[in-house]
Length: 281
Image 1 (cartoon, rainbow, N blue to C red):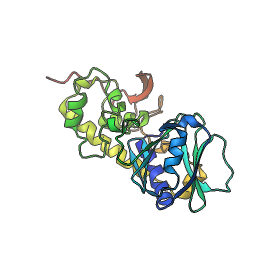
Image 2 (cartoon, helix red, strand yellow):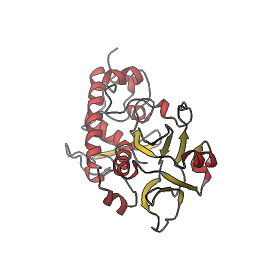
Image 3 (cartoon, rainbow, N blue to C red):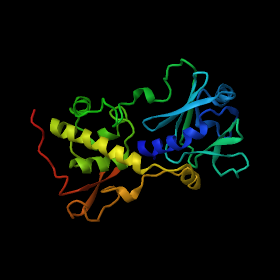
Image 4 (spheres, rainbow, N blue to C red):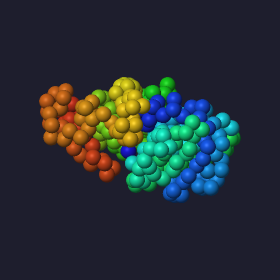
């Protein structure tokens, strides 16, 4: 699943192509991908509206419409959003097409159909997408060590699981949690309540640094995005620990290990990320 930096890359590529265009038509081939207010209501609300901007919150993409309404999209596991000429061959698994006023089309392609669209009417309170429950993002001013300690510091769960909790911090998934914890020299299975205030501060600092660098690394041109047909994955050339089980640690040369945490594979260096005694009360 794309994480925050990859979704931000999608936003930066597509917003200039969408801003100022009007939605001339909406065709929905798979009704299940429209979660609210249903396919017919979605189409009638969006048709004729100008797209005035594109935003992102955590892993969600948003399109602001000229009348004050908002389209919300979550790509989930295999969703891709493309802007293509109307005469471009339609790919398999294309489930939604919005024809634009300039002759281009916004196409949503999703082999596994896990992605979802929502439409929020002007002034409608968001009780349907889940965005209202998201915590701050790693680049937000509110994301600090003190915040993390207050929000998760009493939990018995592994710190990696806390980083995956979108109500604690928005946008982090399996790859970036491992990279952040490696940078912070914290084992992913460390219980939250065993972390000191100093380590929470270090974790917040490294999370910001990892996400900032990853946003830069994942930047791409519209040509690169179209050539890859909307495939946006973490640039694996830059990972230091994720997926490298059995390889030497890039920092100390020790062997990278893998463990299961919450049903997810977690990668760490046994030497750089040593077990720590519980934090003092």
